[in-house]
Length: 350
Ligand code: GA4
Image (cartoon, rainbow, N blue to C red; front, side, top):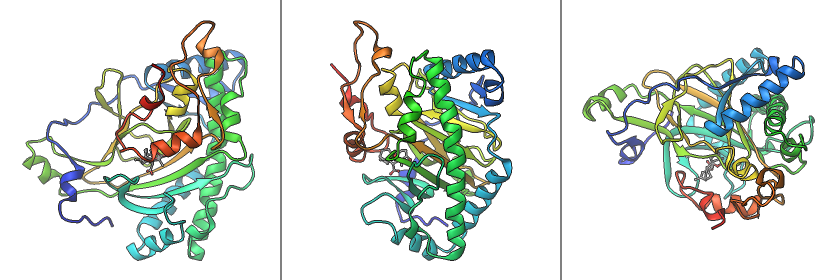
């Protein structure tokens, strides 16, 4: 259970001006089964992926072949973890390296005072191709949690494999000569990838809060932000809450679909594509009746990797919109910012 200190709810509650967001019309979608069914299907899927990344920086993935049974096991194990006592969950946290973001936490997001109605597990995963992943050992104190860790490893292997299919389609959709340019970054043995398991407990009193706020009061689970990495691949249970910002700044809600994945373009991919793909601003709102559980794989480059717009995407005589920087540099800068900040501004060329 998440317990709030006095005054914290006011910070998490959105001001009354935030109306309920309408659902995203015409959900961009790619069916990986079609993409895998021959060169025409593949080319069409590549084009659809690129169009979605340009317009929204966001799309749904179906036909992914990650077994439904694995998704269900992860969801149940996550629910069981978050049902543990606060002490047990915090014990899982204490094993994480002090000062690192990894482990269990509740309400506090990042290091700069952001709060959300959420508790979560944040785990680093290494990227040895196809092999076992290392969700940090100490993070799981008991035998039952060890099996949770093994399960998250199994999930990460499957989702990373699917992520690479999506990254290849992106490269195809961009007509890149080097189709592996993005996958190579995520499969690098030092790739800085992460897994996040979020639990947004319901707030039954939200209804009352809504009345008090004149119908518009809502509670933020995870405040608006863009993801720093190359790609984020999210799967949630059937509870709503995810919202994305469209190009014109309007917020729309994403109808949940527990059988599918949702892909976000991250800041690093916006840079690599010289701004052609859009790092999508998104947030999660709390449901009044049902808990939301989501699991997100963040595919990131190795700390030493140099990022800059790919030459082919800048074009002959074209202007590079971002200066070159290392992923280590970007992350250090990102962790000094508030969640809602425009983190790429600092790296734009003038
Ligand atoms: C957003 C995406 C991932 O969840 C995350 C987040 C990280 C954190 O929760 O510690 C950050 C946030 C995320 C963006 C800016 C910084 C870092 C909190 C924050 C204020 C794990 C990530 O990599 O960046």
